[in-house]
Image 1 (cartoon, helix red, strand yellow):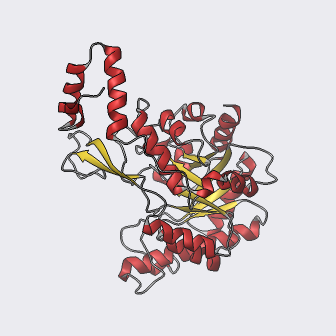
Image 2 (spheres, helix red, strand yellow; image 1 turned 135 degrees about the horizontal axis):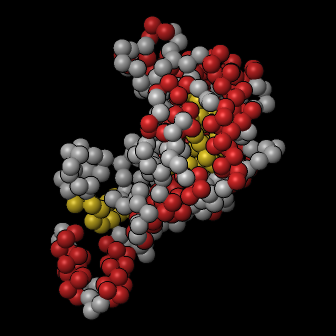
Image 3 (tube, one colour; image 1 turned 90 degrees about the vertical axis):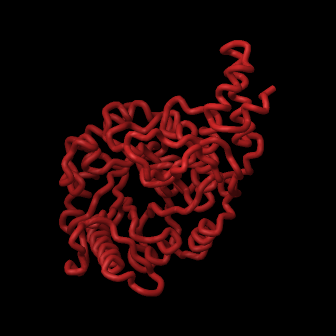
Length: 377
């Protein structure tokens, strides 16, 4: 039985109470697992949404790559667009190297018209509703227009090729409307701003999970779960509704537990994560699956491979995509854990140590080597 003192106070105080109550190391481990089950309400996890139970993600993924001669895992090259000519040439390299398809993204380097660009390049958020959002909103719309021009050049050059688009400029609920009017023949869309979380978690720190601390300060610790959340979150329901009414019926990928998102547990990127962390990650995937066919995740640190334990915890609910960090051996560790692998030119060239210019091109030998490693893993 877990002592009451091990269920209140700080993390250090609860840990001390456990150790004082335990009779041996084995007893301590049993007590700690039970303590975590109580603190994180592991016996009260909500059921999966209907789309998970009917395995819609798996069937949509298979249909999206119907006719492909290889995969799963399906291997996608991500191309950061500059010009239509650059896109057409790079897609040719990707296809020669054996990739199953290409995802196009405008990371803030292409604008149509060019004069809409801001002094500091980068993704600018836009909206399809109300005002343009000033100079940044105009730049965001110009980035979307440039992406659409590159997409149509690619579609004309490669009419039967699997082409996806990534739209970090738009809120998730507005993506489908834009897609239908600008890229209706896209095979997939990637939602980056997917507003959903698996639970309300209390952290032991005045700093929240998203950061804001000095580099030397320790990462805040997840103490306990206050409430499990479901797919009835208002923002998520809005995205689900927009997908349902859209005439576009392609594959939807959504980012979960990746760079730029709030954490749900301090150990979510560690291979030594416990039951509470694994359960939180799995339920996060479950909630996101109410609108996504595939969840995409990766390491929050560009210089570090994604933890295999994280991929395993997230697997089995709906297909999982790994965004490559470029770290050596990452493909071998992730083999058997993911259904889709995605890499851009920088990851292919070595990840965080590669120069920014690698984002806009594919080295065909590096791409062939990446494809070969995954096929033989």
